[in-house]
Image 1: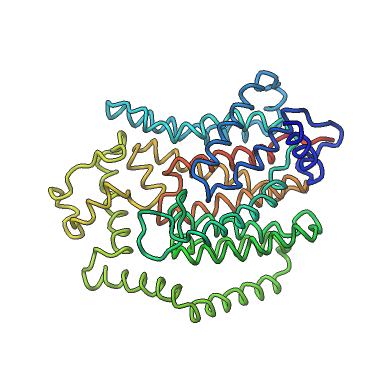
Image 2: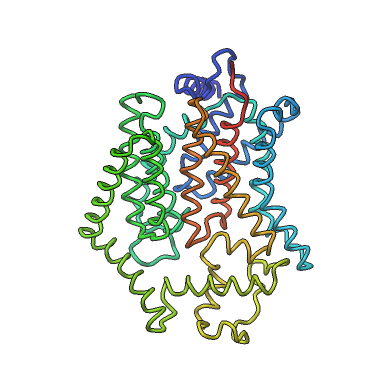
Length: 438
């Protein structure tokens, strides 16, 4: 136990994770840094890994929360702190409100939404702790990708529900795996020399992490992940260059465009997946073929809009949908596969899925979950304080990626994904909003 404490203390101080040099870290600070670093380490490799560490972090925070001076904390960025709390509380409030309007209470439907609600303790506790979460992530994320690559080399198709040769693990399905590995790859790229000149070891880790993340994301065949590439590329360009360097920005965008064409033309799997999507959209509108992967997604969005308009307050929970065969308004695109997909797989869109589940309350919850962090992190990128600016860039990388991923799949529907949201938003928002040492 003592050796673990010494390792955590040495890492937190030497890596810069604990950045207040005027105050020595306490024992609880050291364990906080250790758990914050470990929480994302095996997120994609070991089932319930991040969930476990999130609850440990919440326990540490809740046990120490009595020592907080709330009046002092809320004097700095008071409104922003309250908005972050609202975003973390919103999923549970929406779940309860929707159930009350439906006249049924199911505790199981509150399990996932309770994670960000409980993470309010972590957010409030971290507001007074001089911990640079980005310093931890820039080591832990590339290491987590290296660990994941080892898992996939041994057992590349570990997701039991997928029989085709698409990367998956026992912890994460191929769609989600493709999304998070892409986000982590761009995080490695975005944070390269972000604090100055990285050490040789850290540069190597980030380069390897970026290459592994791209390799795995492409290996999953997750088109829902690839739609975020333009946003993540643009964020990297703007995050690394001054906006006045217009010619350099245009040159980099052009080179990235050429690189995209090259990858598309030389990779049969990527070419095939993209060409398939284009053909499926053409079939949907011109040939009447609704039962393709892309076609079903389009039908689900149309269906979700209709169902929401007919029950905007209560929503439908996870499966209390009416029989689709008796609805004349959707007859033009209704198929047996559509109803089966709706019940067993959802609508493949984060905001619409939450809206169907909890009605208008679910819609407001999604808007808060995405909108509040985006505003908070964007403002932080304009700060002249480096520790705030880097947290803003990292936060935008994460929440922006999740928004684009959520256009064609549910991003916070699983307990592990909403737990990761609770960790990332509470820790990065606290780094942005905490009073800085003078």
